[in-house]
Structures are given as C-alpha cells and as structure tokens.
Image (cartoon, rainbow over all chains, first blue to last red; front, side, top):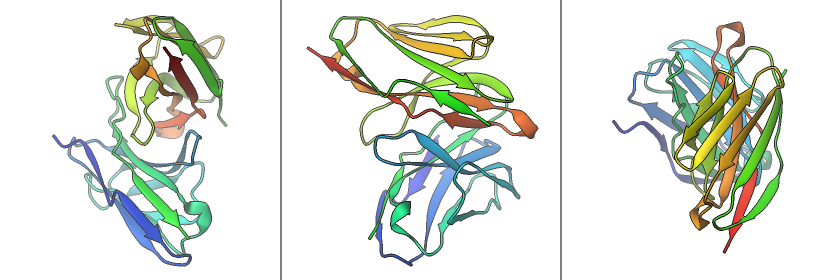
Length: 113
Length: 112
C-alpha cells in the first residue's frame, strides 16, 4: 500500500493563478480531509468528505473548492490564489471505527507571490 | 464549537521525562489523538485514547480524562530525536461526521 499520496510536493504560484492539489489513497478509506498548516501553527481543516459525492466545509474553507468523484481521490482546487494561501497542505484519510489512525500524505508546500 | 489548548513550547534534557498537557472543549467527542511532527514532515500517529485512563506504548504514554476534558502525553527517557512538535487532536463525531480537530501543537526541544 502506498497509503496517502499527494502531488505536487512544491509549487510557486503568482497571485490570481489557479491550481489543483492532488490527493489519492489506496486503503479504501471512506473519509478524506484537507488541512493547511501555517508556519509554527497547528493544522486547520479546510474541507472533508465522508464518501464519494459528499463533501463539507471545515474550519477555513474560503478560497478553496473540493470534489470527490471516487473513493480514492480528493483534489483541492485553489481559485485566484492569494498570498494568505501560502502554507503547507496535508491530505489525510480515515475509516470508521476506533482502529483508524488518520494517515497523512507527505504534504504540498505552496507559495503564492 | 471546539477549543483545544496546549503549551506552545517546552524544553527538556536528554534522558529526562516530559509531560505535554492538552485541554479541550468540544461537542461530539469521540476520542483524542497525539501526533508527532518533525520539522518539514507530515504528522505521524503516536496514540489514540477513547476511554479514560493511561495507554502505554514503549517510551510514550497517553492519558485521558473525559470528565475533565484533559489529556497528556508522557515521554520518558528523552532522546535528541524526540525534538519535534506534538499535536493534540480531538476526534469529532458530531452530525454523522468523523473529523480531527487539532490544537496549535507543542514544540519540544531536547537538549544534551
């Protein structure tokens, strides 16, 4: 199992550009999450999904969009990038039950200038 | 809503014991996680408590008191490689969801 994978690892965007951060998991987890982590801070939940076709907002959803067409994939879309979106983005997944450990992907480091 | 508090920074000496506290106020509590995060890396799972009491796993132990909204992570026989951030996260199972809400993390520095 590759677990949770994310692409790209690094990206520099100009203000106003758009991009999609990719996240894939091969564990057949029904739940998937996007977090952002600003320097020296904890993780803030952007969006999450409880299954294919179902998504919902987290703590900081403004400026982002998501979709979940398959169990495996949960892309995060940034429209009109702003400097405030400079951050490290982590994707995670989980399954119901107490055994879930919420594995995280390696992260995408995004800079908007 | 959720509110999770933990100290911002702690320091300790190699070989010592350190306790990192976490207090929380949340609806739909369904367990508490501790993660370790080295600089520039993703968080990695350390422990999960859903019932009150102490869970021991090698040099690391985690404690939970649901009535007090309190948890701690205990690290024994500290090693230099334990220098990292330690993230407390509450599992929120309200409204048929299942999501982790994180505190700001505690940065631990271990000195020789």
